[in-house]
Length: 81
Image 1 (cartoon, rainbow, N blue to C red):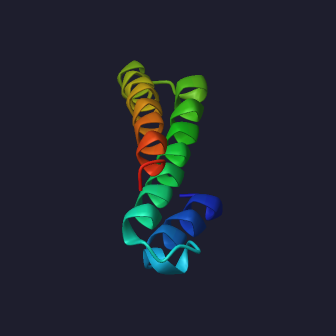
Image 2 (cartoon, rainbow, N blue to C red):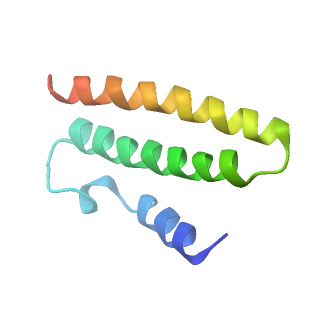
Image 3 (tube, helix red, strand yellow):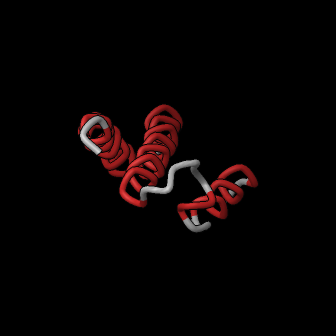
């Protein structure tokens, strides 16, 4: 695991309230999940472009598709919270 990903992982393990300015746990959680999904998409794009194993690339492509759709859904949900 690179230093970047290790630091990101440690940051995500902190309590939600320390990562955002909001006091609403629902809003904070959704915002953190969007960041988490964006990071997963970026990692998956790297796998798609650089990965050697077709099965791993296929999984990465699925992650990109699914989590992009979930980001859209979560952003819509944020407008209602």
